[in-house]
Length: 355
Image 1 (cartoon, rainbow, N blue to C red):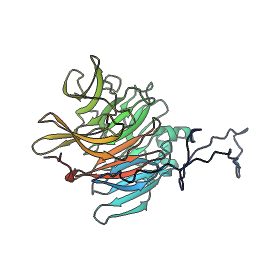
Image 2 (cartoon, rainbow, N blue to C red):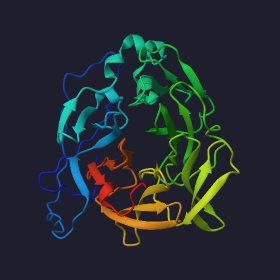
Image 3 (cartoon, rainbow, N blue to C red):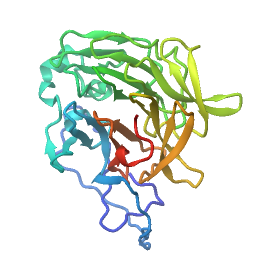
């Protein structure tokens, strides 16, 4: 729901969820009447007519909670409430070649039925909501957690489960960022401002990193290398905030990158791009002016470059995601919240291009 001092702009819609406490388990309400409190009319916020975002295309406006690229180069994204199972989201698919966006069924949703959920021991609505079931866009298997945060992968029908980690009961799984060849990075934190823990593994059930309780915690959601062996993190060190390329298997192995402020853990993870002759790391960070910019750290030259102004505007309880296209030339950004949506950044038109 909106905060008391928030104002709806002309034509704006804000979704909300209301929890109803029922007197008995067998009561199923046929309808509910909601009485809205009166509000105070205020002047509409004036948009800056001179504010532009070169090389950034707005693809969609709305509460976007998932974004991913298919191996074929199609962008898929989901609209809805982040807490809901993915089959309850409204999914869309964008074809960059045709230039059109169309509604689609939830990818992998046809596999989720009562039988598959029972095989996963997800036999209550609370367990299903807590499971955070995801399908890797380049792998047929799914990943989920049980009520005590034991995380596993499985076949679409719930069979052939593979245990990954069972020691994450004290931390909260927030999401996954996909890597090539069925690999991924999972990240955990409790609330805005909390440290982020993580691990990397494969959908086949192969561990790449050490336990999420043993890794070097990060101030930001980590961005992993394609093989999952290293992550870009930020941390406090001797009174400074530094970014480093950290090994996921040995806490003592890392490469310090640069010193600079870290955004909140609700910002997109850094994107590591391995070119033929070098490495670029794309970062979404707030500037000293309070706006949000895309930056590129050129690893061979050890230089940090400002690339583009971004239309992201996040409150602490909203989050943004990023996903790199298979050809590594387009960065998709998404955000939930009142100013949420999907934006495409043309990396090929920017000065920091993967070499």
